Image (cartoon, rainbow, N blue to C red):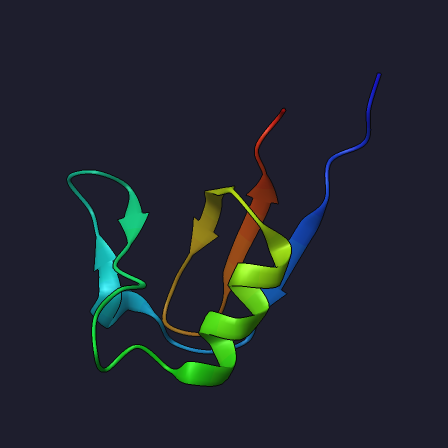
Length: 62
């Protein structure tokens, strides 16, 4: 059993959260650049948890 990678971002990203599709709109021109770089390094992900204080991402199985 492979272990999952987890990335926790302590920032309110609800503005870029698409609730209908359960995705972050990371291609938005106003998306925070330093968060975008962390997410790109992390790779493909699913949102495990999101609120006004933090976002928890889990790596997708390959």
